[in-house]
Length: 389
Image (spheres, rainbow, N blue to C red):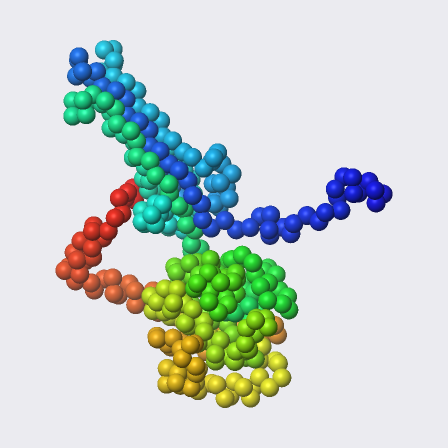
């Protein structure tokens, strides 16, 4: 039996499932608009225009579906037909639609933003077909636009969980929703983003994204969490989860206290994209069931509420320039699933998000005409060639 196993090759272990089916959050596709048809100079005939390439948002899709559907990652629009004496105006080439999931930002190969596809059926032209031959072009059909586009997925969630490995993010997600992320006693349990839904008695729903744990230097592409930082850019609330005992990822890193981990997470986000610190933020101090947790929390509670006033006590290398002010601070043991505490946390999340939406709506409605005109002119100056349909 052993000999047969070796011959057939079954002794080699299959790769773990998550390595075979990892999350695809970025995809490159070469798109080519169709070529325009030739005109007919003798009769003044006009060639048909080449087909355009569009991306259209459809629910229920992933970028893996897109990748499996498109052969060689190349898409070409239909060519316009030539003008003939029997048909002076040539037929236009066939347009091509690429169905993609909502939550996609489309860039060209130079990372120039072409547009965002956030809602179902939103449509964006990414390659224009060539003009048909006419007098202006010497009756020669023009080639269609050609470019490489990058489909960049950013999860559409209301809340983004942020923390170092093994802080309790996956435990929190499992506790407040029906999501079933893997939970274990070692770092990097989460290896791809997870989405959970908080459901309230009045049928209100709030989505929560659990991202792989960050490490020091995540903004410089270190560790597992760096490529997922973009997924919290569209969230409405940043929810930090930290271990009351602090964190030490491995022997390569020094042990960081609870307050130091908060400052480091603050700084990692600041270095990645400072604007994200303008979002409202909450913090959960986890693992309060561990030895000496209450003593540690009593010592840091005041500082957590006023981090900026105590910044000078910490090493300059971990001091952020802009310090977060938390809209809610909770100390708990998520693994104990205390119903009362979890309910308080869920209600606080809802309250902060509602206040955020109310403030944003008020700001949008009170913008002056001059401000809106200035913003419009600024958008026109940017290199956003295609436009949403």
